[in-house]
Image 1 (tube, rainbow over the protein chains, first blue to last red):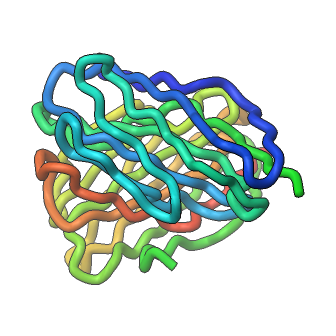
Image 2: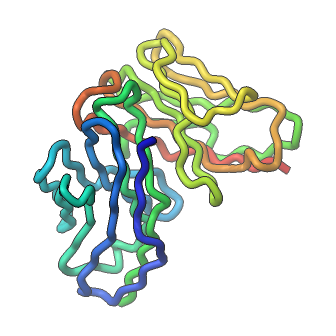
Length: 114
Length: 116
């Protein structure tokens, strides 16, 4: 079945450091890919998405490119801030399947130190 | 604020009991999804409703059931509760059915259930 694998956390960075969180997927159909962020005590918020190969999603300085050849959707940010501390989830929705539900990775906790 | 509301925020109950979680989707959204977030299982899809009808089922236990009402709000019923049912339960909503390319799901703040 479909699945998402993302790098284990936690990840601790200093402010202004470069961030990469790796995400790879397995899907049988034509998946759309998402990054969601969960701040402490809150629900999930969509950070960015991409719906087809080579699409780049971007938002708030974060970006990720849909790479079909490597089945990856790595999240990057050039300069992280303390306010970026949160848990980040990679997810897919398989367009070709009968379900539109999201399949999530296990999440990566990011802590940014001043 | 996503526009999705969930009540209650917190729920503490005992094993063997039954609880009902409520979700109101964003205005105009027809699909409602329920997810369970636990430390050991991560985020797991439970069930989806579209315009009052069950659309898809995931890893939902037989002790759990859900429905979507004519006003589109949804309820998740959990019965014969066990310690392992303690988790954060999220509701999400989206505009249409599955299969729409890249359709975004908007999540509520969740209901934290603690079974003692």
